[in-house]
Image 1 (cartoon, each protein chain N blue to C red):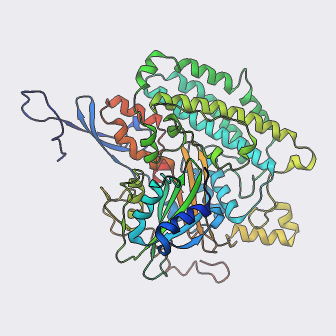
Image 2 (tube, helix red, strand yellow):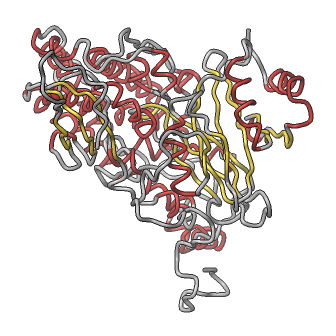
Image 3 (spheres, each protein chain N blue to C red):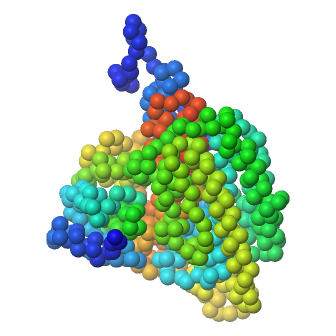
Length: 167
Length: 411
C-alpha cells in the first residue's frame, strides 16, 4: 500500500493535532515543524507506525537563523520510508541560549555521528546522546563555527567593499 | 584508563592484560586519514574507538560565500575517486532548485560520465581489497583502465582527478570524437574493460585464499545496516535493494534497463561481489546510453547544454558581439545571479551510496545553507561494531571493502 503526502499529514494531524505546524511541500517533499520537546515523540511515531514506517534517517543537520529571535537554531531531519519510497522533512526550532534537543540516537544508530557533527558546528546540545563531543573540528575549539556570527571573510576589510559588486 | 572489566581471562591469570594499539591516522593500510584506537587481546580486537576529522576543510562554510557554480570544485574533493558523480549530483541539485530543464542528449551524456565514474570508484575499491588481502596483481591490471577513464574525462573537461566536469545546465563543451573513440576503446568487449573485468573476476571470485580472507569478515545484518544509515553497495551487500537510481530516478535513469545486485550476508566478500556486478551493470548502462546518444540526428546531435542563459556561460564569440550575452557572462562570472528562494534536497547514487545535497536559498547569490549528506561519514559509525571480535588483519580489509574515502568523510 502506498502512502502520499496527504495521508502522512492526515495521520500526523490525527495523532498530534495542532502541535505540528508550518506544513509545506517545497519541491514535493512534505515539510513540517514540531515543538522541540516533541521531536522524539514524532520521530518515534513515524518510526513505529505500521503504515508510515519512516525507519531510515537520511540526514540530520542544523540551520542558523540569527534573526529568528527565540528560535534561532533549526534542527532538520530528513526521513525516508524505503518500502513506499517517500521522504519527509521534520524541523525543530530551538533557542540559541539553551539549545537542548532530545537525541535520536536511541532510535537511529546513524544519528550518532550526525548529531555530533551538528553539535560541533552549531552547538545544538543533544540531550541523551552517548558521546556528544566534537567530531570534525579540534577538541580545543570553543565556538561553533557554522553559526552566522562567524562570517567567512573578514568583514572589517574595506578594500573589498564595493557598491556595484557587493562584498 | 580503558575499562577492561568485560574481558574474561583464563583461570590463574595474574592481571587483565590488553594492548592498546593506535591504528592510524597516517597508516598506509588505512588508505586515508583515519585513526582507530584499538584495544587488543593478542590479535583480537576487543574495542575500537574511531577518530575522524583530520582533513576537514569546512566545505559547508565556504559554500555559504560562493555562487553555485563555484561550489562544484568543492564537491570534487568529497569522494575524489569519483568526482564526476559528485559534480553531477551538485548540478542536479542546482537544476532542481532553479527549475532548469535538461535536454535528453545531455542527460544521456551525463549518465555515460556518471557510470564511468562509478566504475572507476568501484574498481579502485575492489582492487584495494585485493591489495589488502595480499593480491597486488589485480590492482595493477585494472589501473590501466582507470587511466583510460581519466583520459575520457580529460577529453570532456580537461582535468583528471578533481574534474569540475559539467556546468549547471549541461557540459562546458560537446564531447569530441576522440572522447567517443576512447569510450569505444573502453567498451570493446574483446580488448576493453569487459575483458579486463572478466580477468579480474577470474583472479578473485573463486580464489580460495581470497574467499577465506573475506567471507564472514566485517559482516553486518540488513536491519543493523539500515539503522546505521548504510546506503549504496554496502547496504545492498547486506541484502537491501535500495538504489537511488531506481527509487528516485534522476537524469533519465528510468530509460535504462539494469538490475540492482544484492548480497546476503553483508560481509567483505559480498561487498566485493556486489561492486563487481555493479560494474557490469554500469557497462551495460553506458552501452545503452551511447547507443541512445548516437541515435540523435541533425541539430539535436549537437546539443550539449540546456537553454538557461542566466546560469550557463554564453559562448565567447557571443560575449564579444552581443550585448545580452555580455551581460549574462558578466553576471555569472561575478557571481551576481540571484537564485530563487527555496529549500531542496536532492540525492544521487554515488560510488558509496546516497550522496545528498540539502540546499537552502534565501534568494541571495550564495546558498544560505548547504549540507552534504556524505554516505561515508554516516556508515563509518558502524566500523567499530564491524571489526569487534575480529583479527587486526580483518579490520584492515573491512576498512578497504567499505570504501572509506577520507575526503568524503571529513568534508
